[in-house]
Image (cartoon, rainbow, N blue to C red):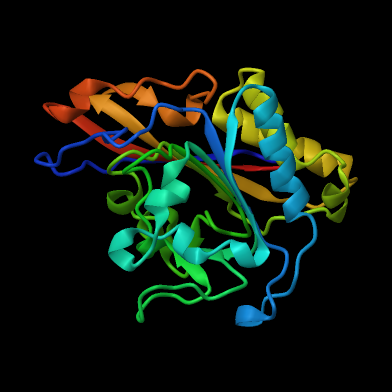
Length: 287
């Protein structure tokens, strides 16, 4: 039997910082999904092509639409740009792409420091080309609350001495509004038959969300079911990295336990910050 590993990380934000989980720019539609998938990499960064990501994300979006969510963005291959995920301070356009929807699903190559693209649309000369890197990202200052990075090792617990919370800096990604990132501690696996309509991991995730499971449980079950369907007996390790909210050291909100169908309210008293702090939870589990 494999043992699930839970790691708790608490980092207090500077008391003078104004905290806002949904910072003012959110539109009236709080049920939008955006999908990005890449199968053609053209040898960029030596990366090979993939099969399965398009079907995986298509099925996630389709399943979410069945329950009243709007597919606001769906981009594939050369139309999926790294700048879609990067903050404007780094030359990106996340405010009109990733941060302009509520739930994002990306499937493609990744690594401990970010996700990879098949074309180079980096807008600053000193940025990571073909890659949206964790230090180029600030999600949640507009709409986005949940991000799936269905990519190898993007949430690897420790990479060359750098823990996940050091690479995906909470001061960058969570200080304004992002609730959770779902991803992988280990290599991930896509199955080619997803592109031909066989039920995918993304479809399972959407299904379990709509059955009322918490994000961490929905992600765990989706991955196990997809692996079982494939008859895959390898072991992989999925992960979730989420924000937690405390009042005078008492836990008030744990976003890993949230269900996007009935999301936790973003409390107005974040604006005051008297006694309120944000910390972070990293949970990984074998499948």
